[in-house]
Image 1 (cartoon, helix red, strand yellow):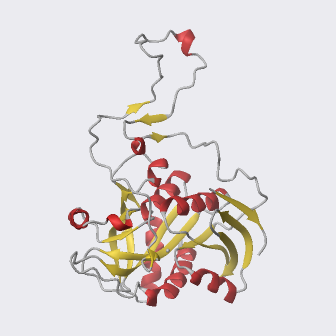
Image 2: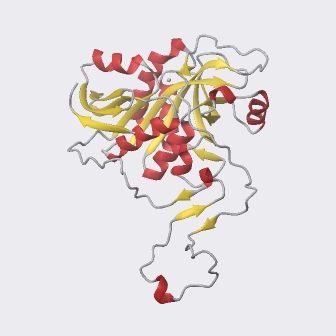
Image 3: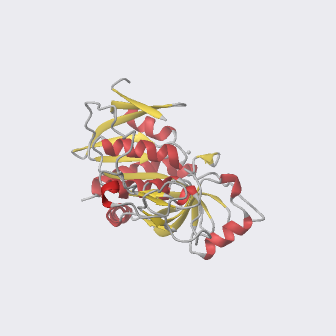
Amino acid sequence: MGVACQGGEGRCGRINKRGKTRTFRVEASPFGPFMKNRLTLPEGNGRIPEKAETEGAHIMSIIKNEIPILEYDSNPTAVIMPDHENMDLVLPRKAVFAFLRDDVDRYAKERNAVVAAQFVSATKVYPVYTLEVEGQKICLAQAPVGAPAAAQILDWLIAYGVREIISGGSCGVLVDIPENTFLVPRKALRDEGTSYHYLPPERFVDVSEKARSAIEQTMKNHNLPYMEVVTWSTDGFFRETKDKVAYRKNEGCSVVEMECSALAACAQMRGAIWGELLFTADTLAEAEHYDERNWGDDSAGYALELCIESVINIK
């Protein structure tokens, strides 16, 4: 869990740079179809309750399943809401939420950004900066590696006013793509757990077309080559097995990272626009010859500037 306060001041190698998420792959369930909005009857009681008995009863919004990760609650209200602290805080509409280690803090310091708030997790304090770029006020924050932590902060940013978000970070490649190549994911395979708390179970989640268009316009403005890709979001960093890599490639995935599907789901559920600019780091293209390469280090700083320009370009 994390808490937030106002004012005040990802993969390791691959782990602290390639943002990664919690995992569960959705295929046909062996336990049959989902059970929607059903009243729970007392054990052994198979009769239909009379109307008088059901009046005022709570109808559950949960889609039930034998596998817990496939259960989904369509009720947008939770016991703990992202803005439960009721802070007097209104963040800018536009934000860059980046998996770029020290580059975020360095950029903010060089441009005298203001610390508008802090998100305090159990392990780290994340400053949330505001600054003006090209006459527009934007929010800038470092994203933590892993879908649960990243989605928690994204959900919190949205609750306090952010509506248009661009993320940036590195990814591993499953096919032969050179290091430091820029990519724009158009959809993500949901092999993580967090997205299933924001959207009903499906195999893929789409990334906002409006966000993708803004990123691609930025790339064209800089005459930079890029590729649209399908990404595999997983939290099983050390479970990217040879067969799984082959399986994901066969269903169209070109790269692997840890958060894309979760952040896309969170933003979609909250009615926000979110997209991501990736750059290639390590390669799993040859399963027998894994290569860390240089983790895409040459692209990080430039990627942040491109993300900032891209969020400005969202119209």
